[in-house]
Each structure stands twice: as structure tokens, then as C-alpha cells.
Image (cartoon, rainbow, N blue to C red):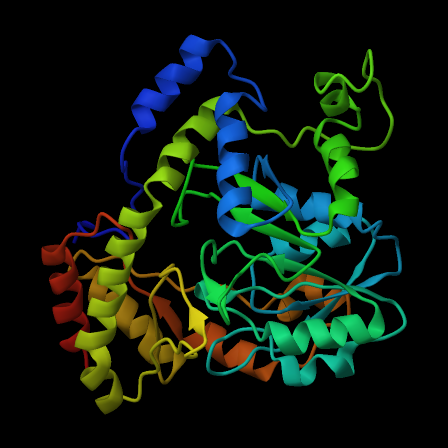
Length: 375
């Protein structure tokens, strides 16, 4: 049967067309135009971060973080094995060795109780990933990092506007990264941002993002011409993309309200079925405020996960699995692999249901009825 309810579907929420037309009319489609600056200001003001810089992707924001931390060959970076490959690729590109951490069985976040045992004299960074936008145990993680003098870089691709103990995710580490990919709550198709919480990184971040030049200082009138002063690359997104993104960020209240309604409807209507069938639903600690990024089922066995995917597909509903364990991949094995049994088990059993803010109530009822008909 043809797919009639996709896993994801980008949606317009307000002034996307108008703002893109304005960007064209203003004649500045390259990076750091008016809408890029509006996005920077909105993120900085809302999150109360010293500096936010849009990038072409979350991957590029992570690459900038690796450059800012001066990652060198032989350095070690601790990351959860249950994450997208971009999280570690950014550091491996600088010569770092990944050290794979297992995840908690409840939130599916980095297991902070096993973190300290992974620290060595070569550890340069810890990169917690806020899975599904649910905050990692940042008190414990930052305490360990501070004790050993290790930088924390939050991969907050899922968690923009989520909170841990009343504090926004992305504001705990010296650096944090955001994603505005097609599948995220707020999108411009492809895009990201680097959040800079340690001001000493700001000037160099601007240089790295501008191909290694001091162009930003030139535009602020601090130098009479700009030149090549450091390594760098072209990490600036088009202002046309920033215009689309700004409309999405402006509409964040309505987007989040829709996503909350969808998440809570899944959680309420699937609770009894999940209990009866030994299916684990998402767990949100009481001190975490999630941004309602995704909804998953953790099936009892890999075979039942595949059977559910097939069952939903037969009814025109697309569901998908998520990350494969990085430590068990070909490249991960070349770096020594890791001991991550929870990651392996979760990866084999997790299934994500359709989740996007334009998902209609009728379509969601179809999904819920299809899930609860499975046995």
C-alpha cells in the first residue's frame, strides 16, 4: 500500500514566503544578511547565550566546535554510541579518537554513572546528546568535566527550547550545536547553529566561520580591510534560508503547542496497549521540559519491531528505526569499539512513529488505531 501518512513532513507556519521575498528584495542572499542577524538575536535573547551563529548544518557547527577546542591527533572525545555519525565525525576529522559511552535504559541519554570510568589523561571533550530533546543529567556530567578540566559540547540537535532543571538545553557546555534539518521542530531544510556560552571563543568562531578571515571585524569597522588570519571554512548559510528559519522560530509557540498535543495524544492513547504488550514508551524526568521532538516505541524484540514496521506500512503508515550503534560500525571497530549493551539492545528495538506539527488529528487516530491493533 502506498504511504499516506509519512514519518515526517515539513510545514509552513507563517511568514516563510513573505520573508524569503523580502530577502530577495533586499538584495542580500549570501550569509549574514538581515534575517541571519534576526535569527542570531532571537536565539541569543531567548536562550540568554552570549553568541549564536547560524551555520549550514549542525554537522558544521560541530566541526567549528572541534576547531575551537583545538582538537589534535591523539585526543579523545567521549560520546554516546547511540547518536548520529555527525556527532563524532567532526572530531575524528581533527584526528581525535572516539570513546563510546553507553546510554541509560530510561531516557536513552548518555549514562552519566559510567562516564568517569571513560576519562583518561587524553580526554579533551565530552559530547552529551540530548536524545529526543530530553535533557541529559547535566549536573553530573558537568561536575565530572569540571573536575578533570574537560570541555563539554552539547549536541542539542533534538532539543532547542527544551530545559533541564529550568535551564535551557544548549547553555550548559562551553559550546552547543543546533540543527535546523528538515526533520527538526524548526527547519530551513538544511541548517544549524553554534551556541557559544564561553565568550572567549566568540572572536575565533567568527573567523573560522568566515573562511579564516577577520571579515566580521571589518564589517564592524574594527579593521580597515580583512585578510586571512586563521584556518576556517565557509559555514554561513544563505540569508534566504535564514529568512525561512526566522519565520519558523517566530512561530515557535504554535509549533510547540501542536507538537505537544501530538506527543501527549500518543502517550495517553498508547499507555494501556504498551503496558499490556511489554512496550516501553518515552520517559521524561519530572525536572526536564522536553520540546516534543519525536515519539518512539521500544518493542520487546527486534523481530516485533520489524513486524510493527511492516504492519504499519501495510496500512499506508511510515515508521522508522533510528541510530545504529556507532561502536559496532566498521569505523567504530577500527577505533576499538566499546562496551555498550544498552545501546545495542535499544537500537534493535526502537521504532519512531509519524511526528510532525501538521499531523492532523484524524491521521494520528489512524496511527494509534493501527498500533493498538498490532499483537
